[in-house]
Image (cartoon, rainbow, N blue to C red):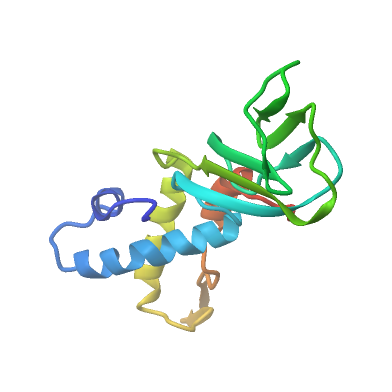
Length: 180
């Protein structure tokens, strides 16, 4: 999924005409993928199946978020019903799945969780980061593999990172930094 549109990129610059449309269309999935790699998670609302090791406890943090639905939970092949506070079963607590009256029995790959996580609409700051990343890629065409250039005693430095600093700053609050 692209985290923005060609129209949004063109409106931000602004870019008139259609001569760059094919290039922007090609950059959309690349920039979106770079952002999801940086964030260590998917942004689009997607179904996930996680196979996890049981930890012997009552809660497990899910790798993708925000979690919008949980469709199935099983431990050692035994389905766990949906429960709630004081009701045996599973309940969702932010990014964690919490069990009441059950536990995530210790074991290797013995927990299976099926759920949906992500955004139905891309958050504006993530979309803006994608727009800026695409515009950086467009600008780089004139100075590929050049980090700085001197002319008439002045030096111009170019951004060489895949994501511009402003995009990284906007993305940092959405970034998963601890592995699960």
